[in-house]
Structure formats: structure tokens, C-alpha cells
Length: 393
Image (cartoon, rainbow, N blue to C red; front, side, top):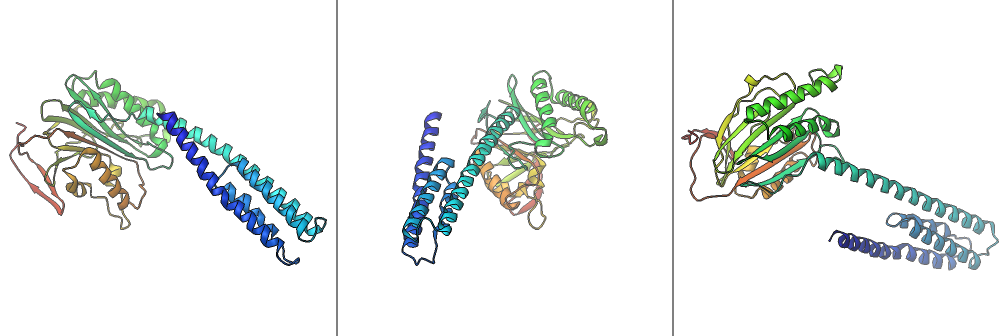
């Protein structure tokens, strides 16, 4: 299917270029006819150089050379029929047009070669970035999943934000994190944390042990590779989560990372209580980590995000109100939710983010009956606290 689509795209591009080719050819014909029928002291031939220059904007060097040759032939015809071929003016015009057309073709060839080199570099970079940050599947266990990544740097698909998910015996373990810094310069630390998570997530019995293992990996990496002038300035926030396939009770451990949002149908957003430990890489101890538990019931959507989302500013220097905005999309699918958030976030930030941003939306299959639970209730028109009975025991 891929080769057929590529062939169709090339064929469409070929027909499009040939359709546009009529414009410089028509321009050559009009200038030639007008020059021949103009007084002998009026010379429109120099305007023929527009034709190859215009062709270069949509075609390659070959078509540009063909149009340049037609322009030179038209100038030759003008010289013969409009004052004589041997006049100094026509000879200069012919030579000038031939030189400029040749330079245009050379420039087009150099441009196409550099485009091909840039395309190859981009292809390698995209492949490397996809290997580093594997796309999450649409279904993990009992969860429907969607993810979104917005890199702050141009031409980058990932940066200092990261996420990963893996299956255990009867649960899903997730990591979302944010390495200090942004763009391609933060990929090294992000790659380390992702690799350590994928290796340790299956070996550690609890999230607390997993957090301690990741802290050890980050600390060891920084001890070996952190420049002396940046000592203590490199770290990563992370949120670890374990979601059972059958039990609504969900466990999480935060290392300086923003808490997730728990969306319930009916324009209600619950913010689970989080007791964050210090970010990874600044000397956190196992005793610092806390295991928080909350109920993630069927029909709910869990939204994980990095601080690049909530710290995006608008023209008035105001932060993006994520909890307030998503309260209007609580009954949508994960894919639709992230589509709305992406469009709204970029509109808030003026079309461009100053920091990398990542989001993951997870949704359980809905059921008819639901229980109440304690949390922070956020309505579309503001914030207020409302306690309720606990169901997590």
C-alpha cells in the first residue's frame, strides 16, 4: 500500500508541476509577441528572465533549464524580427539571459541536493526519536490509551518530556516525566530514564522500589556525565503509576511531578491527592517516596501531563488552566480529549510552546453504576472543594 501511495503522490506532483509550467510558457509567448510588435526603441526582452526564475519556484532544474532555453530562443526570435540579430543591445540581452538562466539552473540543482540531504537527516532523526519514545498502543490491558507530544524546538518530535508504559502480570505500569531543560539537548537524560524504567518495571515488586531504582540509575548517570559547572542542576520529575486490570484501586508515586486529573462524566474533574517526593537526581532516599491510592473506576478518564502544559502562558502572561478547560470534555474519548486540549493549548499559547509538553489519556470501559469518592471537584466555571465518602477503604 505504501509504494502505491508514494507513486500516486509523485504522479500528482508531476501533473501539478506541468500545469504550473503553462504560466512561464505563456509569459514567454506574451513578452515575445509584445516585444516584436513594439517600437524599435522599446525592449521587453529582458523581462524573459522572469520565466526561468518563476519555474524554479515549483519545478526542478531540468524543467527550469527547459524554460530557460525557451526564453533564450524567444530572445533570439525577438532579435531577428525586432531590429536585427547583430545589434549590440540584442547580443548583450542574449548573453545576459543565457548566463542568468544557467545560474538559475545551477542554483536549483544545489537547492534540490540540499533538500535531499536535509530530508535524509530528518528521516534519521525521526527514526532515532521514534526508537527512543515508543508510541503507546491504543489499548493496554483494559485501558484505552491516547498520547500527545508537543516539542518546543523546531524539527524535533521529542525533547525533555517522556512517557512509557509496560504490562505486568495483571496490571499496567506507566511513567511520565520531565527532564530539566527542553528540546534535543535533554534527550540524553530522557533516554536514560526511559531505558531504566523499561528494565526495572518488571523486576521491582512495588512502585516504591521502582522509584528507588530509577533514582539510583539517574544519580549514577549524573555522577559519570554531569559537567562540574552544572552540578545539582540536572534532575527529572516523574510520576509512576500502576493500574490493575480488574481492581479500580490505582497506585501512584510522584517524584516532584504534577498530579494527574481524573475526569468523570458530567463535567467533573477530580484531582487525586499526591504526596510528592523530591525530583530524581537530587539525592532522594527510599523513605521520601509515598504510595498514594485512589479509585479509577470504569467510565473515568485519567489525564497525565507534564508541566509544559500547565505552565504555557498566553499574551497576558497567564498560565493555561488545564483542569478548568478539560472539565468541558469529560465525556469524550481519549483521542478526542487530546485533540481538544492540543487545539486549545496552542491557541492559548499563541501557536507555539516555550517548553516541551506531553499528555497521556487513559480510559476504562464505562459501566452503568458508579460510586462516589473524595477529591477536588473542578467545574467549568471555577474551582471549589467538595468532600465525599471514600470508597478506597
